[in-house]
Amino acid sequence: MSYQEEYQSALDNTEAYWAGQADRIAWYKKPETTLTKTDFGTYSWYADGELNSCYLAVDYHVENGRGEQVALYYDSPASDRKEAITYSQLQERVARFAGALKAKGVEKGDTVLIYMPMIPEAAVAMLACARLGAIHSVVFGGFAPAEMAVRINDASPKMILTASCGIEFEKKIAYKPLVDQAIELAEHKPSHTVVCQRDVLPAELNQARDLDWNAFQEGVEPAACVPVKGSDPLYILYTSGTTGQPKGIVRDNGGHAVALSYALNNVYGMKAGDVWWGASDIGWVVGHSFIVYGPLMGGCSAIFFEGKPIRNPDAGTFWRVIEEYGVNSMFCAPTAFRAIRKEDPEGDLSKNYDLSSLNWVFVAGEKLDSSTYSWLSELLKVPVIDHWWQTETGWPMTAPMMGWDNPSEARLGSTNKPIPGYDIRVLDDEGNEVDDGKPGNICVKLPMPPGVAWSIWNNNERYVSSYLDAFPGYYHTGDGGLKDTDGYVYITGRTDDVINVSGHRLSTGEMEEVVSAHPAVAECAVIGVNDQLKGQLPLGLIVLKAGVQIDEADLEAELVKMVREQVGALACFRTALVVERLPKTRSGKILRAVLRKIAAREEYKMPSTIDDESILPEITPLIEARSANG
Ligand code: AMP
Image 1 (cartoon, helix red, strand yellow):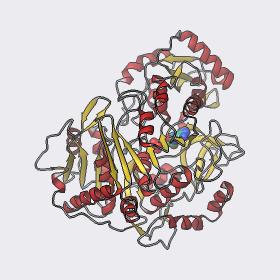
Image 2: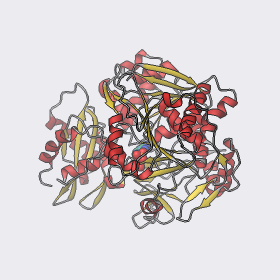
Image 3: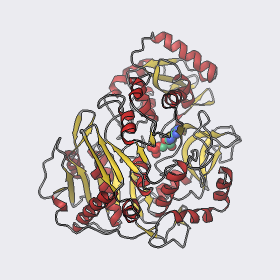
């Protein structure tokens, strides 16, 4: 079938299409019901089917002849450790750890908080929870105690699973004291903290509450997989939003397993036995879907990498990993490639490695600027594939189908076409569909396909008010953009990244695209600053490539000219400010909302997800000096 036929079939015969896809996975009891409307207006999938997500990711492969295949390649330049764990070994480790959790009273439906670095024990912990039908909530390692406490109170975990430390570049971060402080701050008190001791920085244990990772597993009976319903929750993941209280996105077991299996084969073009690298962290949705569950459910060998792209020892680390494990396909955020490019602008380090195993590279999470796209495509000589999704969806909404004979070709600036199951519409603020080529709010007509979160933990009303109220009958993604006449989707950014200059709605993303094409620019952010005359004016913050010598005034003049030529004089782009670094979340998103507040001299809450707070005092005076008329 062609893309068009397949897409149309999912649209016209939605239930039949996804009932067929349910056959991809090994259920204990096949679902009789495919789609159910919940009493608060969302849709769940495969509610009465019975399955176990850990069984599908681990035991199934052992039973089907993959026991000796490597399931996880742990590669940690951060701690100078490597490990190849086969599916049989993973099964043994997960069953034992699940047995230990069970012995301490963890049961189906209980919640468990996981606060761990990228060590294989973290994957074991997630899978062990799934094995028991318990619901894990992974909190990104390095979150401050206050943020962890908010999540402890919301998720009420029976236990916390952690490690003595994480490693960031060369710095060791003691996790255990952070967990202790979080428990201190929280009203809910978990019964135990299980601590995985790392040689590089062991933690002191509190005998009353803490359990040692190894001792706690001694002599326990390995646990079997517990069947759960398709609609039972597998995990809670708090969104990495820059404002407001975090939302506990709930992922179910049934829809998730079917969607990931579908995505791994069709979207990412992976087969059992292939080597896959999701270069992210288990604290984010990519880590859940495409470091742990997706590749393992698909019988791949997955890379579990603990390190940074430009360190240990240099900006050739990614290329080394690709060669060493024969990576067939990888997924990463563009920010990592921008960091590599900044250090090694000509990509010389890649020439030291054999990258011939690589078929293609997927990027998502933020806008892929054309300059990074061209650099990476030319360097690797494989397709660089932009695609788009969110924590809430759990798997891509737009992408070419690389597993099919004729994947849609790339189109510059587009994250490609909607994946079957996602009926993507572009609506104006009144909810009317706009013409092709016209910008608006990107929405998805309900029902959303399997795998997409359909509730928020303990707060269904918040799901409705966050995603469904704005445009009845549609899921509101919060992103702005357009569709062209061939159905390609273009994401311009969150709708609050749109600025209004003299009544013209302009995307700062579009201006960033122009600015980042300048040969001296490594990365940039364009934000709106208040202006008495025009409402808002754009301000560009520029990070230069390493070693570039350029007069700031000359650079500004060149950028102003470029934006005027490519976006138009109406953009009134007049100010470009060179800064050393930009503030980002731990997952690499530029904190534009904070930058806007700094420029507007407004109070802001330090985002819990910020990577390095010290950047803010560094850039605040610079921004204030250049937005003085605000
Ligand atoms: P998160 O839920 O934290 O992964 O963030 C999801 C948001 O990241 C989306 O709503 C988009 O605003 C942005 N995003 C994800 N992928 C892309 C992409 N390929 N291009 C542009 N923006 C993206």
